[in-house]
Image 1: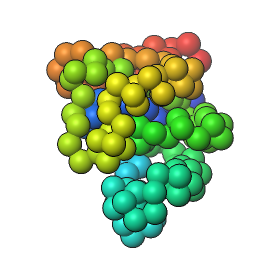
Image 2 (image 1 turned 180 degrees about the vertical axis):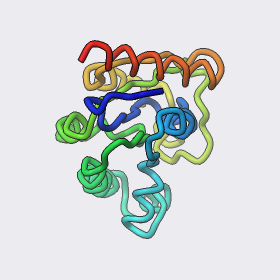
Image 3 (image 1 turned 90 degrees about the horizontal axis):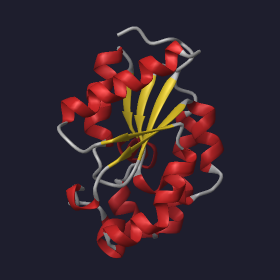
Length: 169
């Protein structure tokens, strides 16, 4: 697939466990882009996993560091970036996201979200997190894609969306 340079980076946002990282890896291969998982990048930046950071320093300090990592990621080009589900909790991150590229919200039914290894999800519950975040996911995104079937369909829908966006530029 040939992607216009107008879409420098593709940033995937959405609830924890909606498929951002898995779909992002496949999408990056299809586009010939690099792939970055923001949680992995966070661990490289801080030397500690997001879950351990939250346990040691709390969620507010984690969100501060997450924003620092995001500011670094906006320097990337031709990269698919899977962001943490709570990136929308810091209002100033919206500007960082849009400065970095096209923002796509991957929406998935709450009953189908993967839930393991997510401390904020475990502490608050999926329904509470969704109630707190869903409006910002929708407002901050340039596009929304439903993850309501299989992974290949999701990636196909993402590719189609990107191609259609390029055709309009």
